[in-house]
View 1: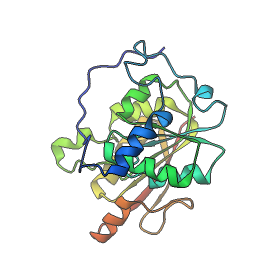
View 2: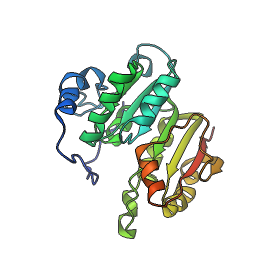
View 3: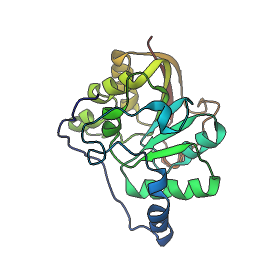
Length: 232
């Protein structure tokens, strides 16, 4: 059984621009069926571990995307790899609504959503159950005093390392040079080996460019792609 979570501050955005009528419909009609249950304290006050084989109803490999933005990458990977199950975590309601619209269009059925803080999911995932994880264009928190809010810090990375299988792959995409620096410093200390690194034009073979990557390119920032592997 997982430990009771500590009281936490959450610093990211929860809501943005007013939702369109279609996006409100996605949230009202589609979210509940696609939401991963047993994650919130209200649903799981004892913080009992989820059973990986019960999440998608079988023993398929489990992947995780942390902060899926508008959902382009998440839906792309679900469609490309129908044999796996992907959980997407995103507390930003507008992003969740955009993802739900893309799911309707793509018709994928191997995807579940946690519309909240990934730390709540970490609380109820057992050790060594995630086969691959993605961190694409995370919030850069550019001010030095806010760097502790970045995902690539010990509090987040320690829990990510705990839930990832030995040999599991962790991909990071960012356009912020200082985020690259901190990723290099912190991720290996959490129990990962850097196995590949590339700049613009060197993304993964199954990568799809996201709205955040396209924004970075328009604004003259170069993408950077890092691949880590969980130590055995």
